[in-house]
Length: 61
Image (cartoon, rainbow, N blue to C red; front, side, top):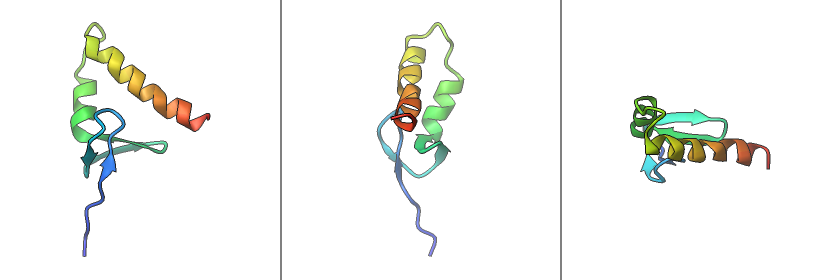
């Protein structure tokens, strides 16, 4: 059997099956796509940076 494993996205907090793992964290496909299409001037950009910093903080805790 090929079971789909759900992980919690570090960006949106939802359980998803498709995405990428960076160090020990998971980013779903939808959030990854939104991040790469977000301009630096947009408010959402700063939210993404804040969420991604958690990867570094957890790795160095």
